[in-house]
Image 1 (cartoon, rainbow, N blue to C red):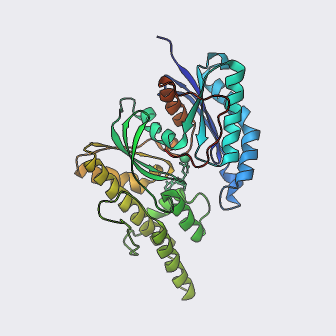
Image 2: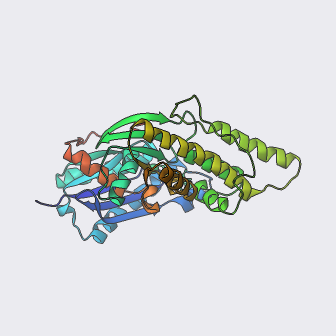
Length: 336
Ligand code: KG4
Ligand code: ZN
């Protein structure tokens, strides 16, 4: 049987990324060009700037991915591309490039949902992993608790009603004057602080709910910071980082474990940028093992935005015959 080679493109936010995969799970190359340095001075991603940078970089990144993989365009069997959710201008750069290559080389164009891509990062990390399992998707734009029944089949158990988990990390980091993106900075500071120093709220919502809400926690932290400023007391940054992070990860961990029990599965998979959080990884591993659960998360490079995860999802979509026409459009608020 012939190997299937996938070229994948991801430009939904501030990473210009391309990857080449063999048979869906073997990564031959995974190139990521981050624009963080450019957006940092604005305190967040500027959509127009992101689109322009993608245009400058995309061809170089794709060529680099092909070269590193030792593959020519003529050997590519399909092209996977993120078509949502994300910034529409940014998405369109990747989509237009993928269309041009698919048309020029007469190969199938495979549309990929970015959230689905994050989940599939785990199929790369764990070659034996198969659905069903419960998946906690926590990124800068999304907080979803999902039951993955089969490839491409999801049951949404719960989602955030307001801020995404990563968004909360980024906003609190900004309030603490730490810079962007905030998640990794808070993660690092939290290891030096006391997680019990400040009693920030844990929001569980109604009994049995798998939804999340982080805006109350965000307000509580901002109010706390303001009250110290008014009293001219210096801010214990490390303790705030540790206590805030503890509030977020306790809720995420508790709900993920409850969801696994409800769905009668022994496997919980974590995905998305916040899955890189050391505190969350440790807590889920510890509490999960107490409950006899198998907790999986991708290595850090596969947690944050990358094209390898998009290529893996594209491979399974392609096997299902899920290919797009050249009229494929970007869908900024695409749902899972
Ligand atoms: O998945 P991702 O790269 O992009 C989106 O699809 O949103 O996630 C980015 C988010 C940012 O909010 C960032 O602060 C957060 O993931 N993040 C983290 C960590 N690394 C990245 N949050 C907490 N701890 C981390 N170590
Ligand atoms: Zn993402």
